[in-house]
Amino acid sequence: MSANATNPADTWTIRRVLEWTTGYLSEHGSESPRLEAEILLAYAKQCPRIQLYTHFDDELSDEVRGRMRALVKRRADLEPVAYLVGHREFFSLDFEVNRDVLIPRPETELLVMEALEALKAAEVSGRVLDIGTGSGCIAIAIAHRAPTAAVTAVDISESALVVARRNAERHHVADRVSFLQGDLFAPLGAGEEFDVIVSNPPYVSTDDQTGLEQDVVRHEPHGALFAGRDGLDVIRRIIDTAPQHLRAGGSLFLEFSPEQADSIVALLHASGQFEGINILRDTSHQQRAVRAKRVD
Image 1 (cartoon, rainbow, N blue to C red):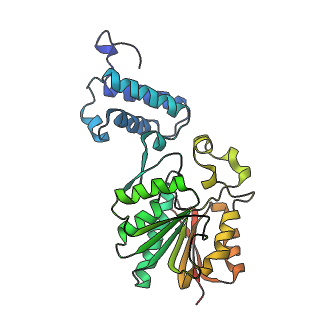
Image 2: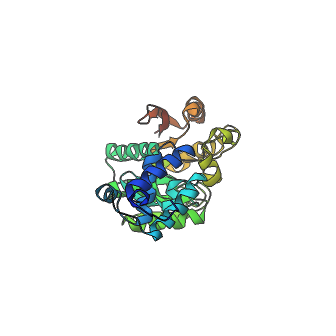
């Protein structure tokens, strides 16, 4: 992509750059090389992806090629595409992301859908608590779809909350999402109760770093990923304390890794504070989350 064009065959058109980048990223381990090539080129050109399809034979300027070259080099070094372009879609909303926050995953949308259903079934306007909000994607998506809900979002990282607040402004819900800095439930008032508590907490075992994709291990915040030898350190604390802040009959939703399902159900039963414990499956039919209701 660095050579100067001397004849039409050497011209770096959109089509040619996409083909070259797709092959290059595939050689460097990308599982979706064509998609990533399109996202990066659209970002380098500052245009919608659809515009690439309608201008396949347009020649790229040296400036755009230079930006694209730098992006591809960073991606080949396993920097996540979402960090390269600074955003990721979640629940049909576009969220700013950077290395201070975990990149939103499609499977986490399950938490939003279930929380919204719980609010609807309870027939209440609803107070919602999002523990470990990160980019704010869960809290903001709930507030966006449930305009009468009052949402509180907590994170231990002030840097993450800076990103979350910008996302709330971006999606016009800043007046209904309150952001608090602190460790899990610590920033809340004594006896403060919610209708729904939701969390995508750290749940990866510290022994499993080699099993994760290396772009995740090398670039995403470890505090949002790892939680002790069995990955349950944070989840245990949430289950222990959530009953103090969940109204009777209120719902707790937790995301986890599929192999942790039995352990989490056992923890919820052992607490003696929850009933109606149900494992929820994501779109890949993996056990991905749990719903538990606080006993009346």
